[in-house]
Picture (cartoon, rainbow, N blue to C red):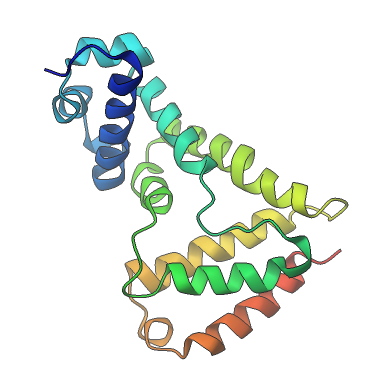
Length: 183
């Protein structure tokens, strides 16, 4: 068992839960498995997070708060977003845990609601804050393009996207994002 250090224990549980939920989705993993991987008991997980749902909600908060694709400069947002998306979905790129977490957990209605709230609070709101005065649903549409491109290029390995010239992909995506995020 792990030595008593509340912050380290909590972090170990969150790391274990992110890995488990990303791998198997909300319905595919239990608190006991997460606890075992973190070196704690299921009772301790429930003491820290209240329930599997509470743990999942904290994992979503942490995963969605991290900036994986979005940038912070409104003047170059479309270009930066396109370049980052192409770079982060390249065949040799590290996996994007928030996307896998979303994809594998969304079939559960409660998990989908938690994911929606986390995405709206951290990702969609971040975009909206970068683009004050822009009409909705621009940020949500941009996020839909990001998610769809990620699924097609990374998960399904679309031949056209996986083998396309990256500069061409960036240029085309930049135009799409410019339209979606325009005033």
